[in-house]
Image (cartoon, rainbow, N blue to C red):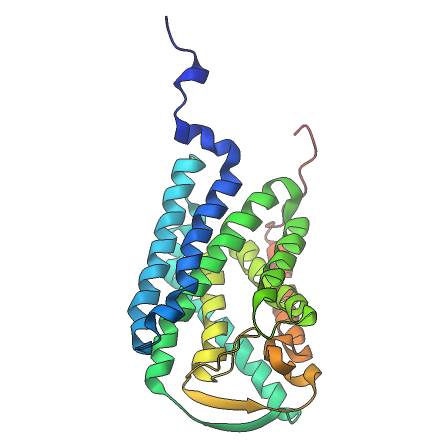
Length: 287
């Protein structure tokens, strides 16, 4: 008796119906390993460089493998090799420039209290840590959540929902506040989603995310997103003044200036994306 097409389907092939939970849960497990990097390398912070780079590479490899096996995609265009270095470098330049612009505005309005040299090797170790965090968060939130949701809900709804969820995940941080989480969603979540929409590549938002976080912690030595630990960055920066200016205990990402700087970048990227026809409409039922 000849088996029917239904019987001949492999278990892996049938996973495509549940591609979102399979991809998200599998890559979230890798994300947990990334989160644990801090405890692993605490005795020797410089170890965070090779370990972090290794985890970032592993995360990308897992995403490629799962996309091909679970979604049955022969190609993974959002990780095209031709876009890797241009995307990473342009994103890094933008992230560095935006954070420095925000810090300059904080200084102009009197929020910069003190600035001194700190640790070169601490900053070097943070390269690996921030690269692994940026890579896995982009793979999860833009590569899986935003991309798959956009296929049915369209760009606008996907951008709003993924940004809010991205901000909500920062509520688990020690010094988290509701406003801080909302600010992260409005600034980081929306800006990084816009970077993906503009380029249709994960390399650009990965570079942007990495440079923003590394400039934040690795260069200026400021705790990221409500973290309780002050990083050993190249500099030691002390901020003072009203929360609207400095972000308070959550850090400068919760300041009004961060919202203004990142929103400006988000609007510009979305305008360019719209002109290039990159904004996808919501798919109607039955289509």
